[in-house]
Every structure is written in structure tokens, then in C-alpha cells.
Amino acid sequence: YIKKLYYHIFLLFHVDRKSQMNTNIDSSKMQVTRQKIIKCFLELYAEQPFEQIRIKSLAEVIGINRGTFYLHFLDLNDLIESIEDEQMKVIANIGKQFRYFYYSEKTDEFAQFFKAIFDYIVKNKEVFKILTSPHSRPNFRESFLEMMRNNSKQKYHSILVQAKGKELLKKEYMIESIINGNLGVILCWIQSNINLTTEELAEFMSYTVLKSPLEIMKSK
Image 1 (cartoon, rainbow, N blue to C red):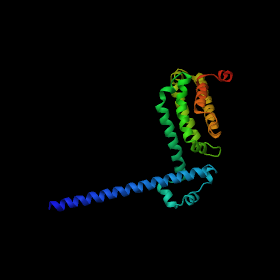
Image 2: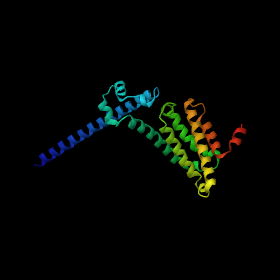
Image 3: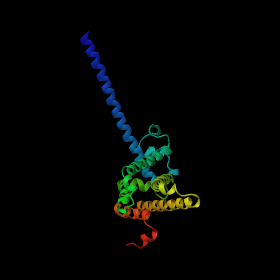
Image 4: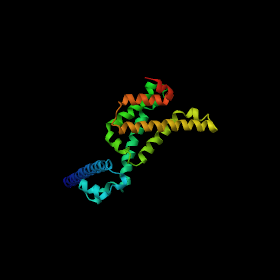
């Protein structure tokens, strides 16, 4: 009886282990297919507007059927949103890690916050170039701008809470001027094939926030 019991336990363990191995294999295959879909989509997105891309043509290029695509994404909107959200989450996490530098009033320390983000962008420059191209959806740029707006309001919270009426409005306009200008610089930098080092751009960005435009224009 005891031998039979051990034998049944062995069979149950063996079957469960084999099932777990198959699950891991299936999970690995799913991940590979998912990455292929993302890679192929980005290649198409680099060449044409989002509205012109079709699931059918995407599946044909990869060599999968439409059903396989729907195992990973609800539709093309779900696909592009997952790509955009993933990048924004990484940038937000980097920002949290370097939050100390963001609140510094010293340009060299403040620049470290930007450099960490720019280093990540450089490592993934092809993805960012596609997501910020002239024919790309505005959603990613808007998300980037909103993150910058929230960060700025946190940085200058003590100043903003003391302002009222038109004084507050002018300060909010100043924030909008700074973040929209800085985002424009970042997008231009990405689309110009990273023509400044991350250190150079981070230093410039730090100056645009902490110094006046006149000071920057006069500096060498």
C-alpha cells in the first residue's frame, strides 16, 4: 500500500512538473511572438501613419494569423498604447530614482535628472524616433508633456500656492512656456539623430529651467 502511495505521488509530481514545463514553454513562445508583433509594427509605423496600418498586413509580414494577434492585443490601438505606456512608465521610474536632483537649484545637479532620462532615450533611440516622428500620433508627445507639467508644478509648488489671480496665471504660463519649449528641444534632438551628447543636452535643459533666456543667449 505504501509503495503504491509513493508511486501515485511520484506520478502526480511528474505530471504537474511536466505541465509546468509546458506552461513555461508556451509562455516563452507567447513572449517571443509578442515581441515580433511589436517589432514589426514599429517598422511599419516608421514608414506610414498609424491610420494606414492594418492588422491583416501586419500579421502577414510576421507570418501569423489574425487570431494569434488577438491573443496578445485587443486591436492596433491597444498595441500602440502598450508601447507608449511602457516607455512612459520607464521614464517616470527613472525620474523617481533621480528625484533628489530634480529639486536641486544647482544646474550641474539638476542636469543629472535630465541626463538619466536622456541616456535611456539614446539606448532606445529608434523606438523614440518612431514614437515622436512628424506623422506619429500626438498621444505620446502629450503624455510626455503632461509628465513634465506635473513635475514642474511639484518643483514650484511652494511658489504656486502663494500666488493668486493673475499672478498665479502668469506663473502657470511661465511653466507652460518652459515645458513646451523643452519638449520641443527634446523632440528636435531625437529626430536629429541625437546631435548633442546626453551631457550637453542635460546641461542645456538645466539652464533653460534655472536661468533666464537672456543669460543663456549671452553664455558661451
